[in-house]
Image (cartoon, rainbow, N blue to C red):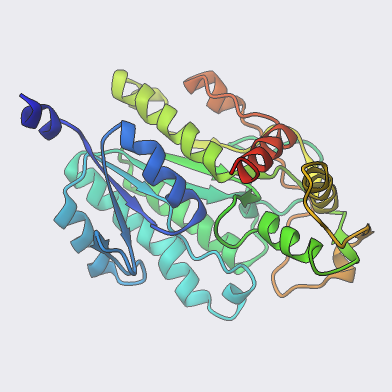
Length: 309
């Protein structure tokens, strides 16, 4: 009986193994099924997303009941010099994954980004807002969305923003390191968005999958594109100040005593960033009942997690 029950657990293939979101997914989704991670150095399933045959072979070898694509080319500035590689991973591979998923009859969940917008809006972007990416990275991610939609299988595309966590390369970890090294920092204050904890992305994904598993009819009307980010908004400067305050309140020794607000022009980078990239999660709440916490509430949870040991 025990073996029979285990055989019925759905197999969930997660592309991306060591990334911020994939690391959380591996743990969060384990209550829903058998999680198999695929990555370049994965012990479970090796894959090179820039190689179409490698992607197809990985899916064929696992034969999953769900696919979650949390892998991407995320080096935003480097993408300006490697547009073909960024497009192969972010634009072409998602379409191949979608084709394979449709052939297997399994749903696909894919993550996209606020960088598909140009940042000229003054109110939160809805899922149906016009896109206009300004960087190679943004264009490659939009191409991935379009490739998945063109296949027209059961899919959810989840755009998120300013992803961070206690692992991987992200703003939170960079700031924590710099606070220990420097007395004064200049932080961009004219870009506004919603910092989103990778663990909340994974938790929301599990909730979406559970809803769809209980009610397969949801794919008739509920598939497609959604926004999934923390509620509220702040600037990079506001986020940095909140991180610093939270660390100090919890007893961490920080050398930084002053955070100076600067403009984007004062901190030029190869790839342009949206000046405003707040996302509207209304459709996610209406269809799936998922309500994301405010970004500062999430940050408190992250800091509590960091200092829980």
